[in-house]
Length: 267
Ligand SMILES: C[S@@+](CC[C@H](N)C(=O)[O-])C[C@H]1O[C@@H](n2cnc3c(N)ncnc32)[C@H](O)[C@@H]1O
Image (cartoon, rainbow, N blue to C red; front, side):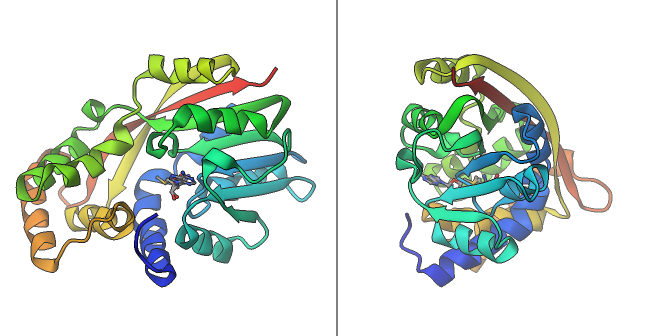
């Protein structure tokens, strides 16, 4: 976890919730819940829940007779999640050691976390451990960077103006787009009946500036990257050029994104 104090972590998490989530993350939870067949009365877990975007949809699905738990390492994300949905059971923990008994949940889901984990195969085994027999394990990851040229272009801008590590912080979320690798990760974790489906989505930012600020305020500080105002302005100027093919007359930025949803079961 980064060096930020809890107030700073919460501020970054607020920016994630307000700037990044509506543009990129909020369009997937119903698709994951459908893939996992989440239904009334179930006990379900959202792994690496962030501000709770997926958990909130799961809570609507399971209703008052079910339960939703969310777990994340970042107390800032959890503070925002708790404020929005106090009725969900939030826990702070590393996903490599989930704080639940074996076989606690009917479904265990993870939206856009797997590519950030140090040992994804360990996390899948841990997700399987807390899943009841017959239950569904569901993971979503973004497709490859070559399918999202707008992010590839922005990553190149950062690399040109700053250094490779900043570009890589933007590339990393798109590093698990290889569906064969995903299926084999599920296999090695002993998860059966694995299925991978690819879904089309769309990223939408109201301006180039807001697209840049979404990462600068809502993601980079978690990766230990802080940029000064002059640098941010220089990045926005270069990004206006690099993102020209994705801008509409109003100045909004929009482009297709892909996600792979992987499901498997515990026999
Ligand atoms: C890209 S965000 C996705 C959050 C949320 N699932 C969503 O769709 O908006 C990734 C999340 O993974 C969490 N995370 C990364 N590594 C983790 C770990 N080892 N244990 C717990 N959470 C972790 C981060 O704190 C962050 O909230």
